Image (cartoon, rainbow, N blue to C red; front, side, top):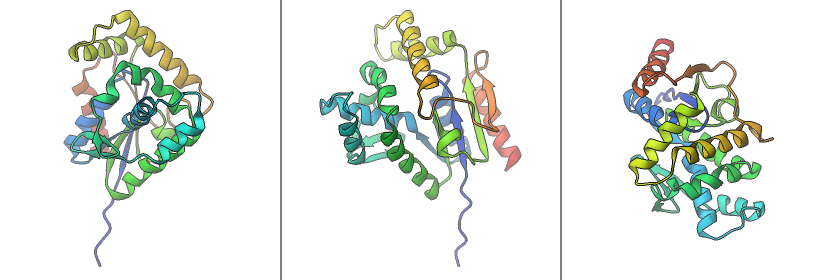
Length: 222
C-alpha cells in the first residue's frame, strides 16, 4: 500500500506591502513546495466584478460570481475561468476595490474552500490576511510579517513605478493606510497576529533576510 505523503502548510499573514508575496515565493522555491497567493484570488473575483459591471454594493451578485468562478494557479500565474489574469488583477482600480469584496462573508467562505483544497493535495506556502487565524489555524508553521507604513508604501511605490505607473508616494501611503483600516477593523476575519505565529518586522530587513528566517525556522522544526 502506497504511503500517504506528509503534506504541510506554511502560513504568512500581514498587512499590505509587508513583502508577503515576494517572500512566500522565495520560501516556496527554496523548499520545493507550492506558493498560493490568496490575495490574487480576491483580486481575481474583484476583476470579474468590474468586468461584468456588477455594483460593488450588490453582495448577492458578487457571491454568485465567486461561486461560478474557476481560479487556478499554474507556473506562477493565476487563471480566471481559463484566462491568464496575472497582470490584469494588479491595476490600481482592482486594488482599491479588493478589500470591499474580501469583506463579504460568503465570498471568503467560497475562496476558503478553494484554499483548503490545495493543502489536501500538496505542501504549500499560503499568504494573506487571515490564513493563520481562520483558514489554517492549526498550521505548524505560522508567520506574521509587518513593517512600518512608510516602508510598506515605499516598496509598493517602487513596484508600481517599475510597472509604469505615475502614482505619487503620497497616494500610495493613503491607499495602504485606507486598506489597513479596512483590514484591521472589518467585522469579519479582521487582520491580526495568529496565535503562535512567529512575528517578523521587516522594516530594516531585506527580503532575503526575512526569507532565510522563515526557511531556517521550518527546517529546524520539521
